[in-house]
Amino acid sequence: YCMYTARGIILKREDFRERDERVFLYTKEFGKMSVVAKGTKRIEAKLRGNLDIFNFVDIIFVEGNNFFILTGIDTRERFQDIVKDPYIYGAAVSCARSIADIFEENQRDRNLFNFFRKTLKKLHECAQAEDPGLHAWLIQKKFQMTILENQGYSMNAEKILPDYTKKFSKNSLILLEMLRGAKYSSVRLSRRELWDIEKAFTDIFEYIFRYRFSSWIPIT
Image (cartoon, rainbow, N blue to C red; front, side):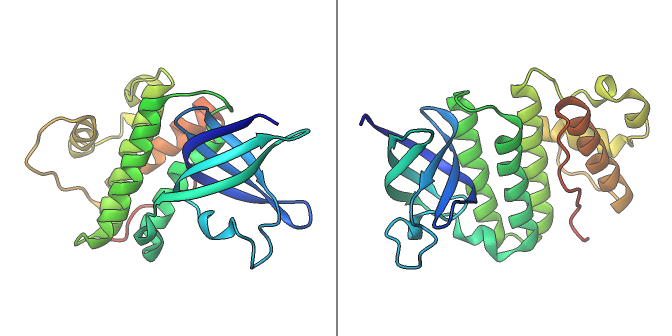
């Protein structure tokens, strides 16, 4: 058997046969890929402890008859604070699902890989913020804008959904500019304005990718 190595982030796990799991990762070397982790449904399984979602890992795998088989795994970094807040966790799951559901396997993009890792690190760190839910929501919007740009779409909502985004307030447009990197001292948005932005992102992703994430805004 040929043996391969990769460095990646665990996106999700699925039941596979009676005792095994199929693990989906986004890797630096191969893009999105999946491996079968044999016997990991058993509590005493050796590989089990390193397979938490969002773990940044080094893996060793071989070719099986139909799937790659995981033979070794070592965790380089755990973003464990993500699971401590439901809003942070929801934002992280949304980012991971975007990659898992939108991208095909073997589409390698090291810049996107590095940005995904930095996004998880920021979500991990924002658990200590004064308003972690709002911080997580802003980080998620920035990630979604990056996905759009990665796929060849500028986040110009007026062009993609002109009828809907005419409703955006001046402050909503300022926030989008800030997410692009523009410098403003601050901006204040109402709950209605947050919902308008969230609805626009949801509609854009469904329109372009036929992919719908669960809409949410932080409770403020």
